[in-house]
Image (cartoon, rainbow, N blue to C red; front, top):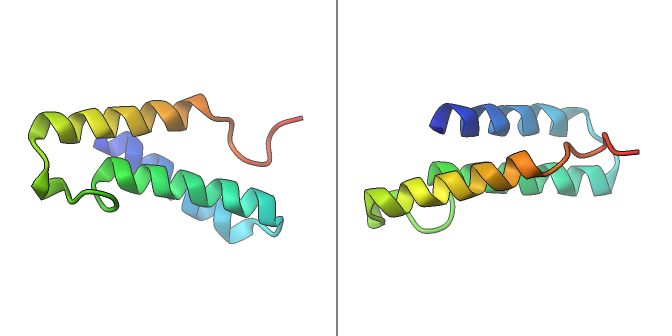
Length: 75
């Protein structure tokens, strides 16, 4: 799961470098935020959570990322 979150994070960071549209940039930044939360880099510190809570948060963030279309690809 962590590797998939890191992949999402890398993809979002890469897309941000090439984006100029403020709406698209904001959407990619949301994806960065979700990936970082899933990895425990933002939000409640991972070491302050139980293993089950960390896994649950990571799973929820990953499902949220996978449910969203990549910014700038719709329509």
